[in-house]
Image 1 (cartoon, helix red, strand yellow):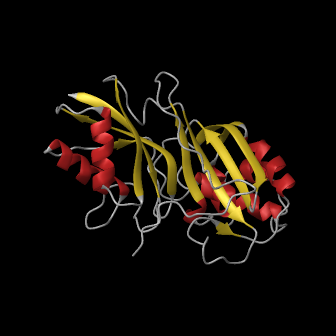
Image 2: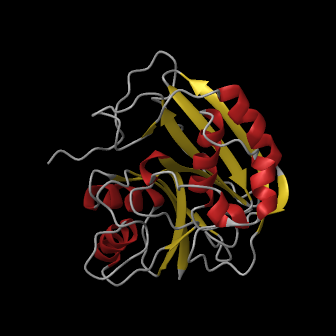
Length: 269
């Protein structure tokens, strides 16, 4: 059995998240159908981090094992020929047998996109449309999350992790053209952790929340932190594997001051 890693970008609209579910369309389900056709037998895909319904990815990583002889290019071409337009395999690479998409990863990075408009018919599936915010304040508040903390305040109900402790390596909030961009990297994330942080930072930025992020974090009480940000603004942007030479994920190229927003991989119905 050989092991392959693959990079995946997907538009989460229309999918019930990553994880395979009976009678529901999922990203894992579509990939496994395509892989199984190419291999002519059932293939299971293991992912770095499961995403929820409506969440997107530009840098998801997964792996699979198969005992058929195919080149990296053949897998890539075959997968992109068999998956829907809203799921794109960006690279495939044969890796050492010990590689594991989840357990070999040392960090994950997410991007959350806001836009300061009440509504935009072309953007509502890809950003959170919000009221005007103080971006500098949001960035300052995000710095209090750095380091290892108990993130119970931002932990979604139903989270199955054995510990609420996580280490945040980087957190930034900036303006990028017409967007406000939150980027956060950690060793791992709790259920809904990024969306809950994104919502709390927005509440601070628009003045709705008077308590600081540091004060909210210290409460260790999810009921104190307000709403959960909607899924459509969230993108899994990078998974890091320093022990393996894997291709870098594609950036969100339409995020630049002079770019025109083009929704990623929107299927035409």
